[in-house]
Image (cartoon, rainbow, N blue to C red; front, side, top):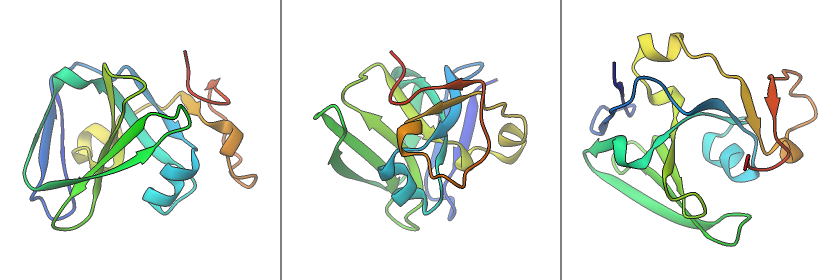
Length: 136
């Protein structure tokens, strides 16, 4: 079953033609904290070529810790973050899991934490696979 979702206003929809994500986890990097307005961003990582996004999106290009670009894709109507696309890892894209359809996100089983070096000290949950930075 593909992964499907949409932004808050439903102007942007997407489908990732995969049975399950490569990684489901928390991204604690400072940029994800700022984009989500929370302690981390819950992401599902999928192959970039499996993803089709429909609707009006804008992209904010920043620089990741690798020194390479990270494109943050969001709905141009409501501003919901949809995904981030790191140039340092060209075959993958990280979907913002809160935008998945309800039944899909209810069944997620996050097991990975990345950028724990930036994890806020009051965030007490610890997942099985922590990485100080990006996994290799």
